[in-house]
Image (cartoon, rainbow, N blue to C red):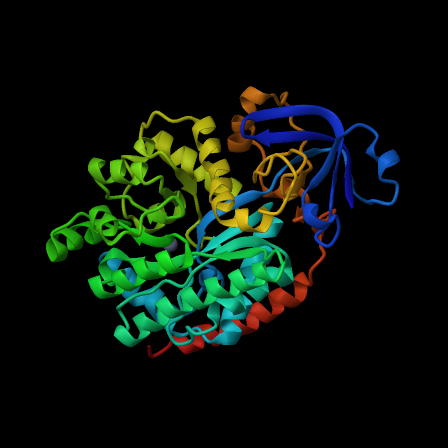
Length: 456
Ligand SMILES: [Zn+2]
Protein backbone atom coordinates (compact mmCIF):
# COMPACT_ATOMS: atom_id res chain seq x y z
CA UNK A 1 0.00 0.00 0.00
CA UNK A 2 1.19 3.51 -0.78
CA UNK A 3 -0.26 6.55 0.93
CA UNK A 4 -0.37 10.19 -0.13
CA UNK A 5 -1.32 12.53 2.72
CA UNK A 6 -2.84 16.00 2.79
CA UNK A 7 -2.75 16.35 -0.99
CA UNK A 8 -5.19 18.33 -3.10
CA UNK A 9 -6.65 16.04 -5.76
CA UNK A 10 -6.31 17.60 -9.20
CA UNK A 11 -8.71 15.96 -11.66
CA UNK A 12 -8.75 16.67 -15.38
CA UNK A 13 -12.00 14.96 -16.39
CA UNK A 14 -14.09 16.70 -15.32
CA UNK A 15 -11.71 19.39 -14.03
CA UNK A 16 -11.82 19.57 -10.24
CA UNK A 17 -9.63 20.46 -7.26
CA UNK A 18 -10.34 18.99 -3.85
CA UNK A 19 -9.60 20.07 -0.32
CA UNK A 20 -6.56 18.46 1.27
CA UNK A 21 -7.11 14.74 1.74
CA UNK A 22 -5.37 11.37 1.65
CA UNK A 23 -5.26 8.74 -1.09
CA UNK A 24 -4.15 5.13 -0.64
CA UNK A 25 -3.40 2.68 -3.45
CA UNK A 26 -2.67 -1.03 -3.71
CA UNK A 27 0.79 -1.79 -5.04
CA UNK A 28 1.20 -4.01 -8.11
CA UNK A 29 1.51 -7.23 -6.12
CA UNK A 30 -1.12 -6.76 -3.43
CA UNK A 31 -4.88 -6.56 -3.15
CA UNK A 32 -5.63 -9.52 -5.45
CA UNK A 33 -7.97 -8.32 -8.14
CA UNK A 34 -7.62 -4.79 -6.82
CA UNK A 35 -3.84 -4.77 -7.35
CA UNK A 36 -2.49 -1.52 -8.74
CA UNK A 37 -5.71 0.43 -8.18
CA UNK A 38 -6.77 3.24 -5.85
CA UNK A 39 -7.90 1.70 -2.54
CA UNK A 40 -9.31 4.65 -0.63
CA UNK A 41 -9.72 8.41 -0.68
CA UNK A 42 -10.52 10.31 2.52
CA UNK A 43 -9.21 11.86 5.70
CA UNK A 44 -6.77 10.32 8.17
CA UNK A 45 -6.08 7.21 6.11
CA UNK A 46 -2.82 6.67 8.04
CA UNK A 47 -4.99 5.34 10.86
CA UNK A 48 -6.65 2.86 8.46
CA UNK A 49 -3.41 1.82 6.75
CA UNK A 50 -0.67 2.27 9.39
CA UNK A 51 1.79 0.07 7.49
CA UNK A 52 1.45 1.89 4.16
CA UNK A 53 4.55 3.38 2.51
CA UNK A 54 4.37 7.16 2.87
CA UNK A 55 4.46 8.39 -0.72
CA UNK A 56 4.33 12.12 -0.04
CA UNK A 57 2.65 14.98 1.81
CA UNK A 58 1.19 18.20 0.46
CA UNK A 59 1.06 19.44 -3.14
CA UNK A 60 -1.32 18.41 -5.90
CA UNK A 61 -2.00 14.78 -6.84
CA UNK A 62 -3.24 14.15 -10.38
CA UNK A 63 -3.76 11.17 -12.68
CA UNK A 64 -0.62 10.34 -14.69
CA UNK A 65 -0.38 11.89 -18.14
CA UNK A 66 -0.70 9.90 -21.38
CA UNK A 67 1.42 10.39 -24.50
CA UNK A 68 -0.82 9.00 -27.25
CA UNK A 69 1.72 8.83 -30.08
CA UNK A 70 5.49 8.56 -29.89
CA UNK A 71 8.53 6.84 -31.37
CA UNK A 72 10.92 5.64 -28.69
CA UNK A 73 13.43 4.69 -31.38
CA UNK A 74 14.05 8.41 -31.90
CA UNK A 75 15.24 8.85 -28.28
CA UNK A 76 18.87 8.61 -29.43
CA UNK A 77 18.46 11.12 -32.26
CA UNK A 78 18.83 14.09 -29.93
CA UNK A 79 21.77 16.25 -31.04
CA UNK A 80 22.68 13.71 -33.68
CA UNK A 81 26.16 14.22 -35.17
CA UNK A 82 25.59 12.64 -38.56
CA UNK A 83 25.84 14.36 -41.93
CA UNK A 84 22.22 14.71 -43.10
CA UNK A 85 21.59 15.99 -46.61
CA UNK A 86 19.27 19.00 -46.74
CA UNK A 87 15.67 18.04 -47.60
CA UNK A 88 13.34 19.87 -49.90
CA UNK A 89 10.20 18.22 -48.56
CA UNK A 90 8.84 15.79 -45.97
CA UNK A 91 9.41 12.66 -48.08
CA UNK A 92 13.07 13.63 -48.38
CA UNK A 93 13.31 14.20 -44.62
CA UNK A 94 12.18 10.63 -44.11
CA UNK A 95 14.69 9.38 -46.64
CA UNK A 96 17.64 11.51 -45.54
CA UNK A 97 17.16 11.06 -41.80
CA UNK A 98 14.54 8.75 -40.32
CA UNK A 99 14.79 5.79 -42.70
CA UNK A 100 18.57 5.84 -42.35
CA UNK A 101 18.15 5.92 -38.59
CA UNK A 102 15.65 3.09 -38.32
CA UNK A 103 17.76 0.81 -40.54
CA UNK A 104 20.72 1.42 -38.21
CA UNK A 105 18.88 0.08 -35.14
CA UNK A 106 20.05 -3.22 -33.65
CA UNK A 107 18.93 -4.85 -30.41
CA UNK A 108 21.20 -2.94 -27.95
CA UNK A 109 20.30 0.38 -29.62
CA UNK A 110 16.61 -0.54 -29.47
CA UNK A 111 16.86 -1.48 -25.80
CA UNK A 112 18.80 1.67 -24.88
CA UNK A 113 16.42 4.01 -26.70
CA UNK A 114 13.37 2.37 -25.11
CA UNK A 115 14.84 2.55 -21.60
CA UNK A 116 15.93 6.18 -22.01
CA UNK A 117 12.59 7.21 -23.55
CA UNK A 118 10.57 5.52 -20.80
CA UNK A 119 12.71 7.06 -18.05
CA UNK A 120 12.35 10.50 -19.64
CA UNK A 121 8.56 10.11 -19.80
CA UNK A 122 8.19 9.20 -16.12
CA UNK A 123 10.30 12.18 -15.07
CA UNK A 124 7.80 14.39 -16.93
CA UNK A 125 4.82 12.87 -15.08
CA UNK A 126 3.85 10.71 -18.04
CA UNK A 127 2.70 7.26 -16.91
CA UNK A 128 1.61 5.82 -20.28
CA UNK A 129 3.33 5.89 -23.67
CA UNK A 130 1.72 4.80 -26.94
CA UNK A 131 4.71 3.79 -29.09
CA UNK A 132 5.04 3.24 -32.82
CA UNK A 133 8.26 1.33 -33.51
CA UNK A 134 10.42 0.94 -36.63
CA UNK A 135 13.67 -0.99 -37.03
CA UNK A 136 13.67 -2.98 -40.28
CA UNK A 137 16.93 -4.81 -39.58
CA UNK A 138 15.71 -6.33 -36.32
CA UNK A 139 11.97 -6.76 -36.54
CA UNK A 140 11.38 -10.14 -34.96
CA UNK A 141 11.05 -9.92 -31.19
CA UNK A 142 11.58 -6.16 -31.19
CA UNK A 143 8.29 -5.42 -29.42
CA UNK A 144 9.22 -7.81 -26.60
CA UNK A 145 12.53 -5.96 -26.14
CA UNK A 146 10.58 -2.70 -25.79
CA UNK A 147 8.07 -4.33 -23.44
CA UNK A 148 10.91 -5.43 -21.15
CA UNK A 149 12.16 -1.83 -21.06
CA UNK A 150 8.65 -0.64 -20.10
CA UNK A 151 8.45 -3.23 -17.31
CA UNK A 152 11.98 -2.50 -16.09
CA UNK A 153 11.41 1.24 -15.78
CA UNK A 154 7.78 0.68 -14.77
CA UNK A 155 5.62 2.55 -17.24
CA UNK A 156 2.38 1.59 -18.97
CA UNK A 157 1.72 1.68 -22.70
CA UNK A 158 0.82 0.34 -26.06
CA UNK A 159 3.30 -1.01 -28.62
CA UNK A 160 3.20 -1.79 -32.33
CA UNK A 161 5.59 -2.35 -35.20
CA UNK A 162 5.16 0.06 -38.12
CA UNK A 163 4.73 -2.30 -41.05
CA UNK A 164 5.88 -0.86 -44.38
CA UNK A 165 6.54 -1.92 -47.97
CA UNK A 166 9.47 0.43 -48.32
CA UNK A 167 12.05 -2.27 -47.59
CA UNK A 168 10.41 -4.96 -49.73
CA UNK A 169 7.52 -7.36 -49.27
CA UNK A 170 9.43 -9.86 -47.12
CA UNK A 171 10.04 -7.18 -44.50
CA UNK A 172 6.42 -6.09 -44.78
CA UNK A 173 5.39 -9.66 -43.99
CA UNK A 174 7.78 -9.74 -41.01
CA UNK A 175 6.25 -6.48 -39.76
CA UNK A 176 2.71 -7.87 -39.79
CA UNK A 177 3.93 -11.04 -38.15
CA UNK A 178 5.69 -9.19 -35.33
CA UNK A 179 2.49 -7.31 -34.51
CA UNK A 180 0.49 -10.54 -34.36
CA UNK A 181 3.18 -12.40 -32.42
CA UNK A 182 3.34 -9.66 -29.81
CA UNK A 183 -0.46 -9.38 -29.43
CA UNK A 184 -0.55 -13.13 -28.79
CA UNK A 185 2.27 -12.81 -26.25
CA UNK A 186 0.15 -10.29 -24.32
CA UNK A 187 -2.97 -12.47 -24.64
CA UNK A 188 -1.03 -15.43 -23.23
CA UNK A 189 0.20 -13.35 -20.28
CA UNK A 190 -3.36 -12.25 -19.50
CA UNK A 191 -4.59 -15.82 -19.80
CA UNK A 192 -1.95 -16.83 -17.26
CA UNK A 193 -3.45 -14.31 -14.83
CA UNK A 194 -0.84 -11.60 -15.29
CA UNK A 195 -1.58 -7.94 -15.78
CA UNK A 196 1.04 -6.74 -18.25
CA UNK A 197 1.79 -3.02 -18.23
CA UNK A 198 1.86 -3.14 -22.01
CA UNK A 199 -0.68 -4.04 -24.68
CA UNK A 200 -0.39 -4.41 -28.46
CA UNK A 201 -1.78 -2.43 -31.37
CA UNK A 202 -1.34 -3.31 -35.06
CA UNK A 203 1.16 -0.92 -36.65
CA UNK A 204 1.46 0.44 -40.16
CA UNK A 205 3.89 3.16 -41.23
CA UNK A 206 1.80 5.41 -43.50
CA UNK A 207 -0.67 5.28 -46.36
CA UNK A 208 1.98 5.84 -49.02
CA UNK A 209 4.26 3.01 -47.83
CA UNK A 210 1.53 0.42 -47.27
CA UNK A 211 0.23 -1.13 -50.50
CA UNK A 212 -2.99 -3.06 -50.83
CA UNK A 213 -1.53 -6.51 -50.13
CA UNK A 214 0.06 -5.30 -46.89
CA UNK A 215 -3.04 -3.34 -45.92
CA UNK A 216 -5.09 -6.50 -46.35
CA UNK A 217 -2.64 -8.41 -44.14
CA UNK A 218 -2.89 -5.67 -41.50
CA UNK A 219 -6.71 -5.86 -41.67
CA UNK A 220 -6.49 -9.62 -41.07
CA UNK A 221 -4.19 -8.93 -38.11
CA UNK A 222 -6.67 -6.41 -36.67
CA UNK A 223 -9.45 -9.00 -36.89
CA UNK A 224 -7.34 -11.88 -35.61
CA UNK A 225 -6.01 -10.02 -32.56
CA UNK A 226 -9.03 -7.85 -31.71
CA UNK A 227 -6.80 -4.76 -31.71
CA UNK A 228 -6.79 -1.49 -33.67
CA UNK A 229 -4.47 -0.14 -36.30
CA UNK A 230 -1.94 2.57 -35.38
CA UNK A 231 -0.76 4.34 -38.53
CA UNK A 232 0.34 7.74 -39.85
CA UNK A 233 -2.08 9.22 -42.38
CA UNK A 234 -1.91 12.56 -44.18
CA UNK A 235 0.99 13.79 -42.06
CA UNK A 236 2.18 15.54 -45.21
CA UNK A 237 0.03 16.50 -48.19
CA UNK A 238 2.02 14.03 -50.27
CA UNK A 239 0.35 11.08 -48.52
CA UNK A 240 -3.16 12.34 -49.29
CA UNK A 241 -2.33 13.06 -52.94
CA UNK A 242 -0.58 9.70 -53.40
CA UNK A 243 -3.63 7.83 -52.12
CA UNK A 244 -5.98 9.49 -54.58
CA UNK A 245 -3.43 9.15 -57.39
CA UNK A 246 -2.47 5.50 -56.88
CA UNK A 247 -5.62 4.02 -55.36
CA UNK A 248 -8.33 6.45 -56.47
CA UNK A 249 -9.44 6.79 -52.84
CA UNK A 250 -9.03 9.19 -49.94
CA UNK A 251 -6.75 7.75 -47.26
CA UNK A 252 -9.53 7.19 -44.74
CA UNK A 253 -11.82 5.71 -47.40
CA UNK A 254 -9.05 3.30 -48.29
CA UNK A 255 -8.56 2.30 -44.64
CA UNK A 256 -12.29 1.96 -44.10
CA UNK A 257 -12.76 -0.28 -47.15
CA UNK A 258 -9.97 -2.48 -45.84
CA UNK A 259 -11.87 -2.72 -42.53
CA UNK A 260 -9.12 -1.45 -40.24
CA UNK A 261 -11.03 1.42 -38.62
CA UNK A 262 -12.52 0.60 -35.23
CA UNK A 263 -12.67 2.24 -31.77
CA UNK A 264 -9.15 1.00 -31.00
CA UNK A 265 -7.61 2.65 -34.08
CA UNK A 266 -5.15 5.53 -33.78
CA UNK A 267 -4.43 7.75 -36.78
CA UNK A 268 -1.27 9.84 -36.44
CA UNK A 269 -1.35 13.48 -37.65
CA UNK A 270 -4.16 13.54 -40.25
CA UNK A 271 -3.11 17.08 -41.16
CA UNK A 272 -4.41 16.82 -44.75
CA UNK A 273 -7.59 14.79 -44.26
CA UNK A 274 -10.80 16.16 -45.77
CA UNK A 275 -14.16 16.80 -44.03
CA UNK A 276 -15.70 13.59 -45.42
CA UNK A 277 -12.77 11.58 -44.05
CA UNK A 278 -13.12 13.16 -40.61
CA UNK A 279 -16.80 12.18 -40.74
CA UNK A 280 -15.89 8.53 -41.37
CA UNK A 281 -13.33 8.60 -38.54
CA UNK A 282 -15.93 10.05 -36.17
CA UNK A 283 -18.48 7.41 -37.20
CA UNK A 284 -15.93 4.65 -36.54
CA UNK A 285 -15.00 6.28 -33.21
CA UNK A 286 -11.31 6.43 -34.23
CA UNK A 287 -8.63 8.45 -32.39
CA UNK A 288 -6.69 11.25 -34.10
CA UNK A 289 -3.23 11.74 -32.54
CA UNK A 290 -2.31 15.42 -32.89
CA UNK A 291 1.42 16.17 -32.63
CA UNK A 292 1.71 19.95 -32.70
CA UNK A 293 5.47 20.29 -32.16
CA UNK A 294 6.38 17.61 -34.68
CA UNK A 295 4.12 19.14 -37.31
CA UNK A 296 5.80 22.49 -36.69
CA UNK A 297 9.28 20.98 -36.83
CA UNK A 298 8.55 19.13 -40.09
CA UNK A 299 6.70 22.11 -41.57
CA UNK A 300 3.89 19.83 -42.77
CA UNK A 301 1.18 22.40 -42.10
CA UNK A 302 -1.53 22.93 -39.49
CA UNK A 303 -4.56 20.68 -39.07
CA UNK A 304 -7.37 23.04 -40.03
CA UNK A 305 -10.02 20.39 -39.23
CA UNK A 306 -8.72 19.59 -35.76
CA UNK A 307 -11.81 20.87 -34.00
CA UNK A 308 -14.18 18.76 -36.12
CA UNK A 309 -12.66 15.49 -34.86
CA UNK A 310 -14.54 13.59 -32.17
CA UNK A 311 -11.49 11.93 -30.60
CA UNK A 312 -8.40 14.15 -30.64
CA UNK A 313 -5.56 12.90 -28.43
CA UNK A 314 -2.09 14.43 -28.01
CA UNK A 315 1.28 12.89 -28.83
CA UNK A 316 4.91 13.98 -29.14
CA UNK A 317 5.73 11.95 -32.27
CA UNK A 318 9.08 11.06 -30.71
CA UNK A 319 10.07 14.55 -29.56
CA UNK A 320 10.56 13.42 -25.98
CA UNK A 321 7.50 12.66 -23.88
CA UNK A 322 6.87 15.86 -21.95
CA UNK A 323 3.10 16.09 -22.31
CA UNK A 324 2.71 19.39 -20.50
CA UNK A 325 5.12 20.92 -22.98
CA UNK A 326 3.27 19.25 -25.86
CA UNK A 327 -0.03 20.53 -24.44
CA UNK A 328 1.34 24.08 -24.40
CA UNK A 329 2.53 23.85 -28.00
CA UNK A 330 -0.86 22.45 -29.06
CA UNK A 331 -2.58 25.39 -27.35
CA UNK A 332 -0.29 28.14 -28.65
CA UNK A 333 -0.08 26.83 -32.22
CA UNK A 334 -3.86 26.64 -32.27
CA UNK A 335 -4.17 30.18 -30.93
CA UNK A 336 -1.78 31.31 -33.64
CA UNK A 337 -3.96 29.63 -36.28
CA UNK A 338 -6.87 31.72 -34.91
CA UNK A 339 -8.81 28.55 -34.11
CA UNK A 340 -11.76 28.53 -31.69
CA UNK A 341 -10.35 26.22 -29.01
CA UNK A 342 -9.09 27.29 -25.58
CA UNK A 343 -6.74 25.50 -23.17
CA UNK A 344 -9.80 23.71 -21.69
CA UNK A 345 -10.47 22.02 -25.04
CA UNK A 346 -6.88 20.81 -25.21
CA UNK A 347 -7.09 19.54 -21.63
CA UNK A 348 -9.97 17.35 -22.82
CA UNK A 349 -7.67 16.08 -25.62
CA UNK A 350 -4.81 15.44 -23.18
CA UNK A 351 -7.14 13.47 -20.88
CA UNK A 352 -8.63 11.53 -23.80
CA UNK A 353 -5.46 9.43 -24.08
CA UNK A 354 -7.00 7.58 -21.14
CA UNK A 355 -9.86 6.40 -23.38
CA UNK A 356 -7.26 4.60 -25.53
CA UNK A 357 -5.98 2.85 -22.41
CA UNK A 358 -9.52 1.90 -21.36
CA UNK A 359 -10.22 0.35 -24.75
CA UNK A 360 -7.05 -1.75 -24.61
CA UNK A 361 -6.57 -2.51 -20.92
CA UNK A 362 -10.06 -3.63 -20.00
CA UNK A 363 -8.65 -7.17 -20.24
CA UNK A 364 -6.43 -6.42 -17.25
CA UNK A 365 -9.41 -5.57 -15.13
CA UNK A 366 -12.20 -7.71 -16.59
CA UNK A 367 -12.28 -9.93 -13.50
CA UNK A 368 -12.25 -6.97 -11.22
CA UNK A 369 -15.26 -6.44 -9.04
CA UNK A 370 -14.22 -2.90 -8.24
CA UNK A 371 -16.44 -0.11 -9.41
CA UNK A 372 -15.33 2.93 -11.33
CA UNK A 373 -12.80 1.29 -13.65
CA UNK A 374 -11.52 4.20 -15.66
CA UNK A 375 -8.08 5.56 -16.47
CA UNK A 376 -7.36 9.18 -15.65
CA UNK A 377 -9.75 9.25 -12.66
CA UNK A 378 -8.95 9.76 -9.02
CA UNK A 379 -11.56 7.29 -7.80
CA UNK A 380 -11.56 4.08 -5.80
CA UNK A 381 -11.01 1.17 -8.19
CA UNK A 382 -9.29 3.26 -10.87
CA UNK A 383 -5.75 2.27 -11.90
CA UNK A 384 -3.27 4.01 -9.58
CA UNK A 385 -1.22 5.86 -12.20
CA UNK A 386 -0.49 9.02 -10.21
CA UNK A 387 1.68 12.13 -10.17
CA UNK A 388 2.37 14.33 -7.16
CA UNK A 389 3.23 17.88 -8.20
CA UNK A 390 5.11 20.55 -6.23
CA UNK A 391 3.13 23.52 -7.34
CA UNK A 392 2.73 26.70 -5.34
CA UNK A 393 1.07 29.17 -7.71
CA UNK A 394 0.71 32.91 -7.29
CA UNK A 395 -3.00 32.65 -8.25
CA UNK A 396 -5.77 30.37 -6.91
CA UNK A 397 -6.38 27.00 -8.60
CA UNK A 398 -10.02 26.06 -9.19
CA UNK A 399 -11.99 23.65 -11.37
CA UNK A 400 -12.55 26.34 -13.96
CA UNK A 401 -8.92 27.46 -14.39
CA UNK A 402 -6.90 24.21 -14.24
CA UNK A 403 -6.26 24.32 -18.00
CA UNK A 404 -4.95 27.85 -17.63
CA UNK A 405 -2.54 26.73 -14.91
CA UNK A 406 -1.34 23.91 -17.17
CA UNK A 407 -0.85 26.22 -20.16
CA UNK A 408 0.77 29.13 -18.34
CA UNK A 409 2.28 27.75 -15.14
CA UNK A 410 2.78 24.08 -14.36
CA UNK A 411 5.60 22.22 -16.05
CA UNK A 412 7.48 18.97 -15.67
CA UNK A 413 9.85 20.69 -13.23
CA UNK A 414 6.96 20.41 -10.75
CA UNK A 415 6.94 16.59 -10.82
CA UNK A 416 7.85 15.27 -7.36
CA UNK A 417 6.60 11.68 -7.17
CA UNK A 418 5.22 9.25 -9.76
CA UNK A 419 3.44 5.92 -9.34
CA UNK A 420 2.31 3.48 -12.04
CA UNK A 421 -0.10 0.68 -11.16
CA UNK A 422 0.35 1.60 -7.49
CA UNK A 423 4.12 1.16 -7.65
CA UNK A 424 6.32 4.15 -6.87
CA UNK A 425 8.68 4.86 -9.80
CA UNK A 426 9.98 8.29 -8.78
CA UNK A 427 9.91 9.43 -5.16
CA UNK A 428 10.80 12.93 -4.01
CA UNK A 429 12.42 13.60 -7.41
CA UNK A 430 14.63 10.51 -7.13
CA UNK A 431 13.99 7.79 -9.73
CA UNK A 432 13.61 4.33 -8.19
CA UNK A 433 15.07 2.80 -11.37
CA UNK A 434 18.76 3.18 -12.23
CA UNK A 435 18.50 6.42 -14.22
CA UNK A 436 22.25 7.11 -14.35
CA UNK A 437 22.99 3.65 -15.74
CA UNK A 438 20.20 4.00 -18.32
CA UNK A 439 21.52 7.35 -19.55
CA UNK A 440 25.14 6.16 -19.69
CA UNK A 441 24.08 3.09 -21.67
CA UNK A 442 21.98 5.30 -23.97
CA UNK A 443 24.94 7.61 -24.71
CA UNK A 444 27.10 4.61 -25.52
CA UNK A 445 24.45 3.20 -27.89
CA UNK A 446 23.77 6.65 -29.38
CA UNK A 447 27.39 6.80 -30.55
CA UNK A 448 26.97 3.35 -32.13
CA UNK A 449 23.70 4.37 -33.76
CA UNK A 450 25.17 7.52 -35.30
CA UNK A 451 28.17 5.52 -36.57
CA UNK A 452 25.84 2.85 -38.00
CA UNK A 453 23.98 5.52 -39.91
CA UNK A 454 27.06 6.66 -41.83
CA UNK A 455 27.09 5.22 -45.32
CA UNK A 456 23.43 4.13 -45.22
ZN1 LIG B 1 4.71 9.42 -35.70
